[in-house]
Length: 380
Image 1 (cartoon, rainbow, N blue to C red):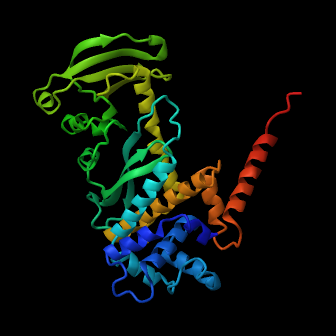
Image 2: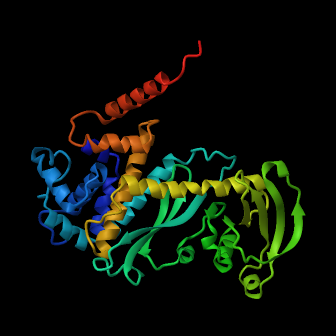
C-alpha cells in the first residue's frame, strides 16, 4: 500500500533536486530517498519519535525493499540525515507536488460566483523549548516557529509556506509574496500596512482585509446597498494621514457589515466592481486557513519535531506538507469523495498491506455512502 501511494509522486523531479543540492554526496547507505520515505511513513502512521519510526520499520524487514527503502533504517542514520541533508530538496519537491495539486483542483467550487483565484494568508505558531531550539527565538523564556501560509482556497492547497522564528511579525511576509495578477488575497487586519498593500494594486491583484480601529479616511462617494443582506454601507474612500497617503495614493473601498451575531465589521478592499456582499463572503472564506492549521496540527507530525536544528525542523515540515498534498492528489486522481481525514486514517493502518490502493479506498467510500444512507429516516 505504501509503495502504491508513492507511485503518484514525480520521482524524476526528486532525483533532479537531489543532484542539484548534492544530497547524496558521500552517502553510502542511507540516501535522501530513504530519508524521505521514512519521514513520509512517520507522517502517515503518526509516529512520535525516531525510535518509533525505527521500531515500526524494523518490525517488517522483509517488506522494506518493496516499500522502496534500500538503506539500513536506524534512528541515528535518520537523525544525521535530518541534520545534514539540505532542506531545500524537500521544499522544492513539495512545491512540485503543490503545482500538480493546484492543476487538479483548479475547477473546485468556492461557494461563491467568482472565477478568479482566491488565496487566504495567515500564520500559526508552534511552541518549542528554548533550551533545545535556541535559533527559534520568540520570548525571553520561550521558543517558537511560525508557519506563514498562503492557502489556495480551491482545494485548500498551501501554495506558499515561510518558516520563521516566533519573533517575525506577520506583516513582513507580504515582502516575500509576489502578487498574482487578477487574484484575490484575503487576510486579517494584522497584515494592514498600506505601503505593502499598494504592491497588490500595482500588480493588478486584489486584497480583502479588515480595518483597524484607528483607520482614518475621507469619504468620496457612497454606493447604494441592500441593508437586508447585512451590508450597512459601501463607500469609496481615500486615506487622510500624511504618510499613509504617500504610501497608498489610490482609492479604497470601505464596506460596513453586520453579521448574524450583531457584530459590526469593517472591510477594506481595492476591488471596486464586485458586489459588497461578495466581498463579505470572500472574507468569510478566510476561515478555511484556520481550519487548515487545525487540521495539519491534528493529523500531521509538526507539533513534535524529530530534530532540534533549523534544517531538521524545516525538513520535517516540508515532508509533512508534501505528504498532505500527495494524499490530496491521490484523492483527485482516483476521483474519490472520501475526505482527506478518512483517507489518512485508512492509510495509517494499512501501509504494509498487500492490496490494491484503489480497491481499498473505493470499498471504504462505498461503506461510507451506505452508512450515510442507513442513517436516513424512512418517511413512509
